[in-house]
Image (cartoon, rainbow, N blue to C red):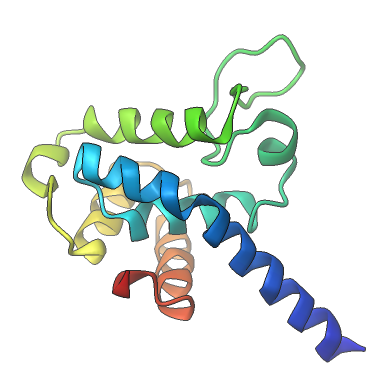
Length: 140
């Protein structure tokens, strides 16, 4: 039974990445942020698309902000709007101009973590790198 659950979980996770790959690729071309970074951050922040913030608020990056609800997480009208908001946050950071267009996802991840994106940067970087490696996102 455990192996069946693991197989289903992996399929769902892969489904999340496939479902959002086109958005990440489009925004990568627009902003010069690697699609692997965009997808892996979204994956980690949503638990593969299963978190309440992603399913209820279309918030795939843990972006905080005011809502009409009682959540600290900002609400978006679509998944794409959430992905766009993440990219908009990134382009405002000091490191952006130096990394724009670079495909070196490790530099992006380190810069994002160092700029305070996560409250536990070392663990966050480990998880992001694990997703990129496990699903071969750097190869795409």
